[in-house]
Length: 160
Image (cartoon, rainbow, N blue to C red; front, side, top):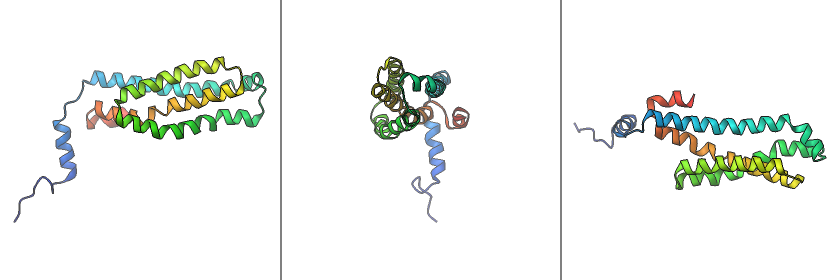
């Protein structure tokens, strides 16, 4: 009989051994990171909700038709989210996630404020595109960052 070497051992057992050997940040730091991620996600959804609530005023203010308003409400933000999301996911792989996520949050806040100052429809669409691009920074980095902050047994609770 031959002995089982670590290379042929159960992959799940190797992952469990590696997780046991890792040092983890304090739970307090992990829950702080979770709070910041939840806050950023809340602000992103809040922006979309308030924008939807103000749709009629925006339509009147910029003298928009239904199609133009529909474009700003949906595809303008989603297109930026999709096309910018892939390069931002690459940035998350290259640079520290906390800096990429922080930049995304700063972009969302700044551009949302600029959206309130928009004087033309083009400026308004541009601000919505950048809000979508800033929101795309959350997805790629948040889950992997939380996986680094919490032990595997805590991940279901944190993701819930």
